[in-house]
Image (cartoon, rainbow, N blue to C red; front, top):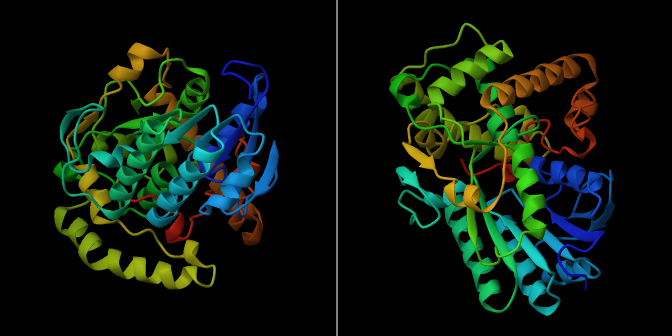
Length: 368
């Protein structure tokens, strides 16, 4: 098997249909040293070859690992899928170890921790099912390393940018519907973001980085962090969701306690007939807690080990807003069946690979 750094290595991308995986496939296609292969159930062929297997089954992962040099696990979705996929990967990799696994985790592993958190910070309650699954996945990866494998864990903050379902599309929908806006003290939490392209660049760099096996790295933009209130107001203005709505504490409480359970139930029912995207977004308790959580995800460890340049916040907001407006124009001008399949010709960023262009069913959503 080629050593790390040799030319034209094959990278298996698990979760290539989500925005991070899709952009990663584009970056690998443009890279002189890598070729990417997507592993998944229902991914449209774009660049790279397609291996259509069930990522939650060890036997299918083992088959997909044949001839692969490295793996990036950026699986998203419901906690059961994330956990089953990571377990299957680690089990299969013990028999046929790749040179490296880059495992994408999440800042949700910190739970309710506040203040400046680094990679040594222990999780604090409350921890929802999604956070517990992410923690368990990290434990599986560390056990794989302890057994002799090579793997590195990356914990991104909220992944923002064109195509991001939870932190761009969802928030844009809620702002446009005047269900989010100026939250007052409810939005005084620290907004930790990383641009999707910056995260992708980091993951590509991690494939060949030396001395990182067994390490865990936070990944979050290094510019001064706005509050969620500041970010929401700026993003609302950028997408034209003005005047920005002032949301009272009583109204937010009604969203979480009364409306959210109804919407989640409706989305589950609609999802069974393929209509989950038609149900408005539910604002979960964990999402609303995050908006007031005083947590700053430190990227200092990563900064001392790698030269990472982060996209400025203003530029990230502007390009994401432009993408959103273009998407809305496309949705208004094209047949609904095309838009619902994610055919976003208006998006210049590997649009054919996006599955998260329209609102996904609940099983495809993050835990916040």
